[in-house]
Image (cartoon, rainbow, N blue to C red; front, side, top):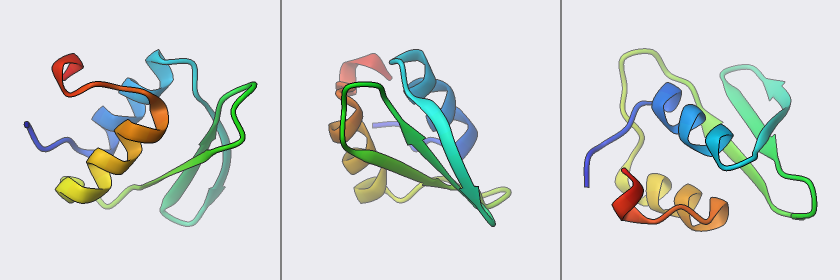
Length: 68
C-alpha cells in the first residue's frame, strides 16, 4: 500500500462524500451526512500518514485498498 500525504487522503475522503467539519490547529475533521463517525486527518508538512492511521481512516470512510 502506498503511503499517502494528508492532502492526498483529504482528496480521497472528499471523493467519497466526506466534507470538512472543523479545523483545530493542524488537524481537520471530516463528517459525512448520515454517518455518525468523524474522521480526523493530521496535516504535517512533508510527512506521510502512518500506515495504521491511514488504514483506520480508510475503514471509517469505506475506502478499499484497491482504490488507492
